[in-house]
Structures are given as structure tokens and as C-alpha cells.
Length: 286
Image 1 (cartoon, rainbow, N blue to C red):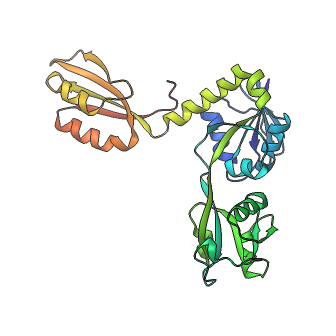
Image 2 (cartoon, rainbow, N blue to C red):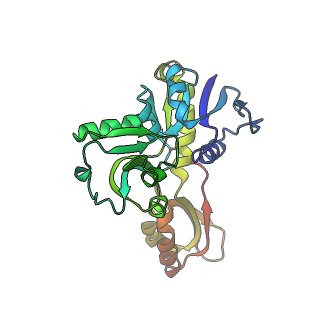
Image 3 (cartoon, one colour):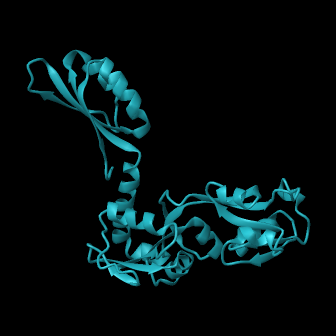
């Protein structure tokens, strides 16, 4: 049995649950207030906890694996394994100041300035490394309001689009780190439950590999086959099969990057391809 800690709410919850569903680890009997849930795999159980607590749960061995933000892992400093970048929940942890503050770079910050943040450890380390003496004010949320109510002169907060900062007349001064969701592991569990942990990593990796990939299928005249093979090489080359048609024809299938689909279709049509299908892919296991 392995236990996976998953955020019980917030911006990482639904993407994490979608990843589990897409990878085949469908969660069963999940009620709104349940702390534990089973999955279709009897050897995998899910724990629903706060994203901020997942690093500690994994470090202590309460959970073998966890899904949480890289920023949370760095802030907590718990010694856990970073197993896989899950590529969702992307954001940047930035220093921000009021637009009228005159602060354009970190070096403009006056010693003794107050910085409001939910990430006191990261913030303290950052300013210590830059040799700037600041007072870190810990807040539990909505720190973008801190400069406007006199709580602090600056903030350190997560941003994705920057819209919230602009709405509150704040501007970015410098990025401290970039973050996204990660699969993390308890170091002992990664060793002792290696086979099951690898199953989970493979399942998640297969879903991530399938994103931004499409399966293109088309019927191609024999005369155009060699040229078609050049424009859709695929992962290991296209799959080709002879079609029972009145004229010499081949079915050509290939997995390609989503961004290449438009170009491939237009080139293929000019070469005489027809009956072209573009299909989504759920998982790729290499």
C-alpha cells in the first residue's frame, strides 16, 4: 500500500485530480469532507490535505508520495525527493512594490523595509543573499493589500498573469523562483516501495507525454508516399499499411506535436492525401 497526499482545495486540487483520472488512478468514494479515499488500484490510497502541509506529511512518512507546489517544498525545507515535474500550476514568486514607490530593482529597497509574504523562509533567504536587511511580515493570504494598509512597503507573492498586481497598483521588481506542481516522495518509501512508486511515475509521465501530441491518420496515394513520410516522421517513424482500394493507396498514421498539425495537414493535402483524421491521445508510454 502506498499513500499519495493530494491538495484538498486550491489551484492545484482539480489539476491533480484530473491527472489521477487521466493516468488511470480513479479516486473512489470521494466525498466533500473525506480525508482518505481509495482508488481503482487497491494498493493506492489518497489523502486529502492542505497543499502547504504535504511536504511535511511526505517527509514524516504519513504519505509516501505527494502532489504540491515546488514553492511549498522550498519554503518548508523538508528533505523529500523531487520525482516529477507535473507541469501544471505554473507561477512565479516575485518581489513586488507599489507603482509609485520608485523601486525598480532590488537594490533600490531601503534597509529596514517591511516585506509581507506567505513565504517567510524563502523571502528571508533571498534578501540575506542580496545583503539587504528587511523585516519579514508573515501573512496568511491577500498580501497584495499590505502596502495599501501600511502593513509593509513590499510584498513577495506568487503571480501567474500579473493581473492581480496591476489591479492593486503593484509592479514586479524581481523573480525569486519559478514554480509548478511536483510529485514528491519520502526518501525511504522511494527505496522500499520502489516498484509501486515507479508505477505511479510511469502513469503520470505517460499522461504528460501525451499532452500537446496528436495522432494524424490519412490515406495517401502510392506516388506521394515517400514525400508524406518526410513531413510526418512521428516518434519512431509513421505506421504504414496498404489500403484495399481501386488505386494504389496507403494508410499512414503518426503521432506528432500539436503545433505541427496545421502545417502537416496543409502539406499532405497538396501531396494528394485524403480522409485525414486528427485524434487526441490520452497516454504515451515509451
